[in-house]
Image (cartoon, rainbow, N blue to C red):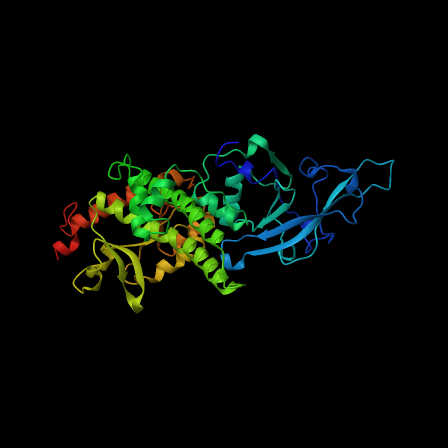
Length: 426
């Protein structure tokens, strides 16, 4: 099994698009997901599971949406049984029966339904709203196209390329803890950082140094993506080392277990994971600009003390009355969009067209249209692009190279030469 394969986490996958009779709001209200016997290859036809009673399989239910606050997770079970076990004259009809819980209660006709069997035999049921970005991403991740018929995947069907940051993020949203990869750099990291976590800027410098062949000036899209992905792999590997060592040391205070210390440590691990990726991405974006000779200012304070990630060519120009501020470029930087893209809209009120540099892919068409109508245009590394059919010219996501070319032309309008910072001119 190659490193990065989904087969590390799943024995098999089945997916379909829910019909009305599959949901508790539907016509039958039978708490069953239909599909005739299509789940057989995933769940088997064990004779011990003929009856409905006592055939519950431990199951985690996850409703995942574009708004993290609306996502739900419930640990329960699901029943897999032959509804015709009492009638020997008729062939078996296996059914998947689910209980009412917070997730199944809000399932709707048309939603994506994923049933995954994990190596330990437990099940994972994932429901995503029809037309959502996360629905598109789940279909892309597993290489499926949900219809009312059930599609199943096993073995080689679950082989993928390396699990990148976005894939790891989706799996973790589903409650799957992704195993760290062996980068070959752990010993060097432990020696360099003395077995602890360095500052985010220093760690980003280290990650870039492990990829000396990347030329941001020749290929800004490739360099940005490679730097960030390398740092994500390195961080997870270092985190595994540091956290494992701390757990081995224990949380004892005299003769008692220091629960408060354990809780503080757990929270620090979780908070570091959440904040680190955003800082790392911004560090690498900054480095791409520097190597490409693009003038910029980071963390620019605008209206009501809001902070914009980057303003090009200079944030100081934004506060000058004699400058046409619509000529400036307001850029937000976020690893993922979800509902947070709207934050960028209010971070520079005098610039009507704003940009958001992100790593997210397979954003729904409806969300792209909403962004365009609100004056926001995405910038996404070229390797993460997909089909933008239907988007009006000038509203589809740009590549990093295209954005840099635009920034270069804008700074020339202000008389700033390549590699010259705006504060050297004004």
